[in-house]
Amino acid sequence: MATDNVGVVSALVEITTADGNLFERGVAVEVDAGTGYWMYTAMSTIPAVAAAMINVRVSDRPGNVVEVTEEKAF
Image (cartoon, rainbow, N blue to C red; front, side, top):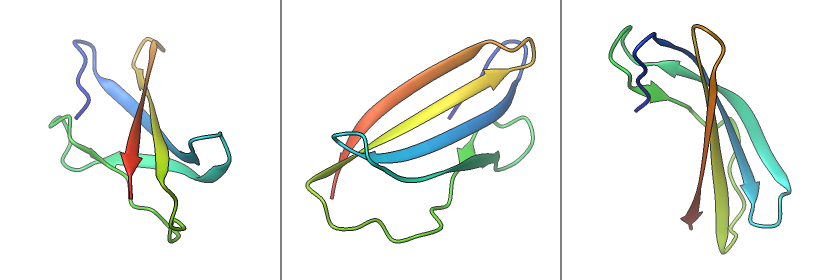
């Protein structure tokens, strides 16, 4: 979920190994306009690894950017 008082306009998702090797990158789409719920659908199977890092970079209308990274265990 991503919300902003002036409106989120884009969300870019990157999935990497813990040491930074890129699995895939792509654009998330807002499920329903104005809801703040964004979805990214992976285009490939992520290999079995101990953990992956999921980074989301969100931009609002004036161009401000916020980035969040979380670790996901598989």
